[in-house]
Image 1 (cartoon, rainbow, N blue to C red):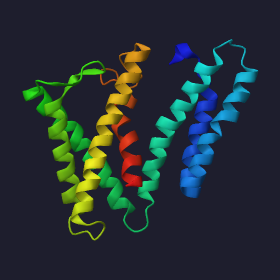
Image 2: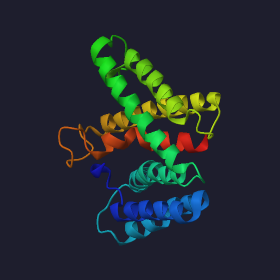
Image 3: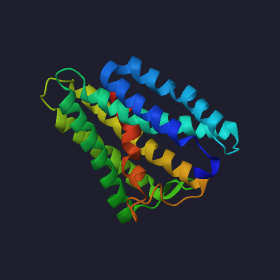
Image 4: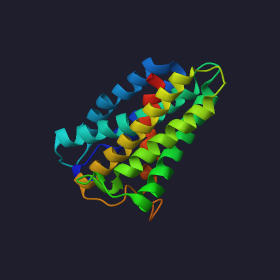
Length: 211
């Protein structure tokens, strides 16, 4: 989003404060860290010599913190759930990775119907269904007889994670398409960038935490 001139320093500061807030004070201080982005970004805006569109600059800065910082912070919140956090965070990670992998391979093999052609032409309904089923199965078996949730709750949790993961993937695809970029960064050339590797997690973690 460089063309929209986001306040990069303000965004990074807000992201760090969001993560620190989540680690030290839970949900309340996560929100406080996230909201701190606005005054910090305003200060950066005042001292900047670049003349930019204020609405676009503030919007993209805050979007980055809420999307990336908020998603990562909720991974911390899931991990810090008393007694069962470590099991739950691994369950979220395994479910998302299994969902993505199954959707990719089944979509490549038998995908015929486009899931969201205007946003991501490569994704198919068949891949989405397969990924969701595999995601639910992974969550069910990961939590089976662990005295964390009931059988029905584990199925609901798997469904929430799988659906949120797909939405997270589509959300990033929509952002990249709107901004006219192929990759979110150059660090993982050929793989779409780091954001492409974690976009599903950034939505799946909040879904798992609140459910």
